[in-house]
Length: 551
Image (cartoon, rainbow, N blue to C red; front, top):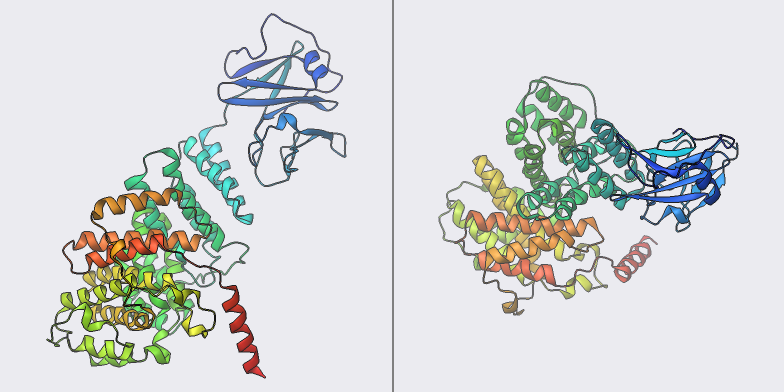
């Protein structure tokens, strides 16, 4: 920024009032003598408020609104830089400090816009020209990236707004976030990635104003920033190998990330896209009852997100997906779910016994597995029975279970555990419809949810008040509420959008399904019942018990 030295001669010309425009984007502030006498001047032009300061070092102009929370910098304090060559402006509300000479933010996070100053015949003129669009886009993206270091939520909102104002594709902020955070997830894909297509669908389908269009983008970008906050780099292997679908599945099964990523890179190098890779990825995700259903959900949602953002985002998303599959936990190896493997081995697809949701409720995991096999010949009836049982149990979740403080870790069950049966069923239906050979795995794994959750249901609970008469109005009302969800934790808001999206997809796919009423009522109850997220007493009790058992 050009600045006037303290000894620059000044002449006064009152022929033009302060604030009068000049050719181009220059605007007259007033005379240098007047500005020096006052020390500062607030110039208003259109929607802009510009603070103009004069001190021993020169004349400086900047946005009057502090980039932190918008308080007026005209009320700030000016001090000389230690070297005497510039001016430090301090916002007195939160002590943010800006170097008006060099432009650096010395205390705080966001940048302060400054305006070039020119002195002509003793008059102070400002150049209000905006930088070129490409420069503004690059600056907004860089500032957005910097906001991740401390998860500056409001700054993220401003930079996404600046991208839009600079006529950039609003999704470029999300694409950038995926690139910046790609190697910051130790175990690959998180809920931040998985919920992104649902947030974007909400934006496309229901946003009716600019703030509503901004919120879903901010939720996804902010969640990526949160999940990667202060995480080190976990670099992906760089080797590439000729792609082979069976080899990719085998590498994931062997938990060999280097080989799996190398095969993925080979596929991308050949120009293959997600749809070419979906079959082996779905096979790997459903190879076991694993990661509490997240593996299959992540495959489904990664494909949706790549479809939405385009092939430029395929590499970071697929690398993280493969990593998450490699590191997926194997619940089918723990005693509670060992019956899954036995049932899968025994599956012959010939079981002809009719089945309903009530036939599957109240059963343990082993009993659910055996009951499923007796009806394995009718995939549609079995799917409806399993989803119906999951929805009915969800509707009658025994809420005191979530508040209990005297149970072991294996009984740490809450609302979110029940939502996964629905979101997982949604992923199973889509993936297995595209790849029918995976139906046995998908159906049996829904059964694992049903058997596990059966122990935490209050079948005497009267759920009549949660019944939904108008599904379309219900989904529109509840999904629109997500624009201002008021949840402080991303993990909660993510489950809200994921559950609503999955339930709506399932009911849209089969409006006459026998489980529709229970699923709607269960979602309605979940949205409006208490959700306890911090369990101080339970944690303390379990910690004391764990330590006592060590001695």
